[in-house]
Image 1: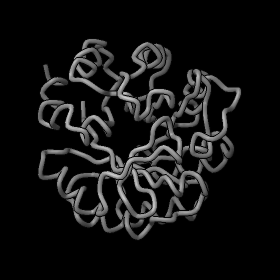
Image 2: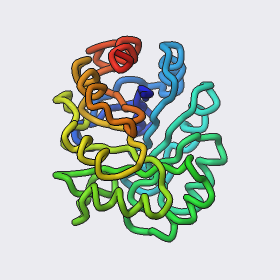
Image 3: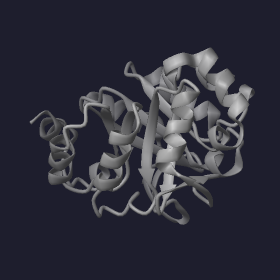
Length: 241
């Protein structure tokens, strides 16, 4: 299981939000590129980069900064934020982003999702963001009436292979991940799942490992690493058992 250190970008800085609230922000670095290098030096096998400005506006606000991150590290980058049309897909695929995460558009434009799967194959990932078990869109600002499991089955039928699953109520709160929701999702669909949001303690990672869900292939960790609840090496060791 891969640990993805999270680099969330807002206004050109690396930040963390609480529950996706753009007004509840903590700045952890003024230099996201240097931060990416730091995580690689600490042993990161991959990075999870999100343009929060793009997630809210639909415009690739920090495109140049993301490109610099991709060029600065040798590990694969998973990127999300503002991927809502073919142009944004082409931009991110073109600069060498390994996994391109489509969020809102996967819910609102299945025709675009089909073209993205045909073009990118397994490099196309869908962001499965949930509020109270229902899919959330537009930077988590809007909630749909479609359940996470129903949506996961729908996109699996369109050829999607992997999702990043986030319970928005847990993100940035250090209250522990929604392992019950994760288990239910893992049992209900064949998709590879990367868990994101809520990891606070090494025990959270041990419980994640204990789920024994073979299709849970990674976990995104943000605030807990930045606030030094544990190191990246300790996180990897906890998942390895």
